[in-house]
Length: 233
Image (cartoon, rainbow, N blue to C red):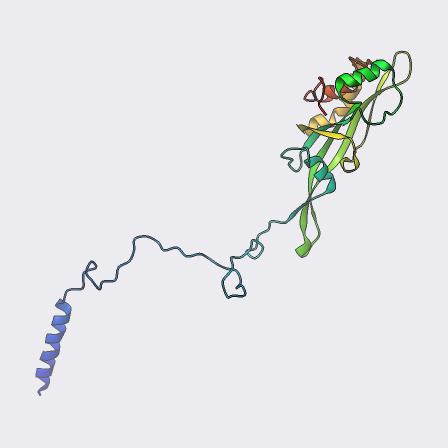
């Protein structure tokens, strides 16, 4: 066969291939692509014993979130406190029930006033919720605590006119056997002025009166949210 004949046949075959119509996408045998996206679960963890991939934990993914624990003091106030947040101050009133052993024998009218109020004595407690980082490496954690805790208390001296006085002392909610009641959040500014507020109260109310000038009226002056009416224990 001559070379020219072979070349003619090759050109004829090539023209048939170029002119052929492609298979329509809607015809049988066509390859179609769905409109939706096929989602697959993403795993970047290690294999379990059966060879199944396990999702990676937050620590494996490089999370900086640390485990949080609670100190005993925080647990004590959190039992009655609501939505306690770090770096905020909270107030509580603390009461000795009528069943508590009396500090000393009092006059009948004082005992009667206590019965009217529903408790033997009341204190005003304040403190700040803290959040500190402890440990290192894999043992690093954050701990919620309750610091700067103080209690404020009103008393009176012996004498015919019963001059009143106030006292402050550190307050440890953990070892406290008295009843604890949540008052609410209080600003740092108010906390810092509790001493001045107490001095002014003593100045304005110099003499103790079981019915009108007592530990309850004093605590109410420090925080008006503390009820003046009978407290249900």
